Length: 92
Image (cartoon, rainbow, N blue to C red; front, side, top):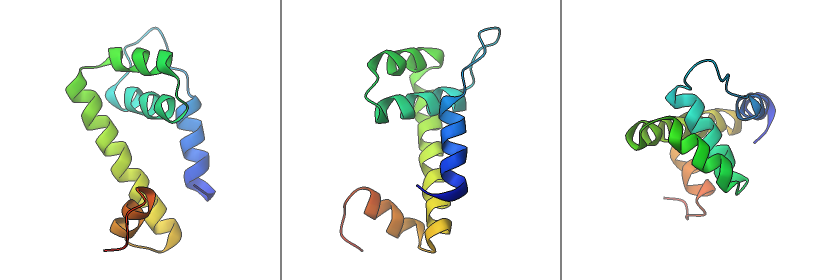
């Protein structure tokens, strides 16, 4: 990840959730995905408990879509090309 997307991702994943309010599904998704990337089981479990499994799934899916679109724009490629490259799949 490069440029503005990297800075936004780092800021989003480092943001601590305020304890005086319930985290929303996008905060849960951001923490969950970052924890998965860092293999941090404690944070994975914590973020997974903030919202329902369905809400977490929606948030993770939305985060993935936004990330692929941002990378595609940054690279000047199609979202399909970027998604396939991230997964190590051959070009379609």
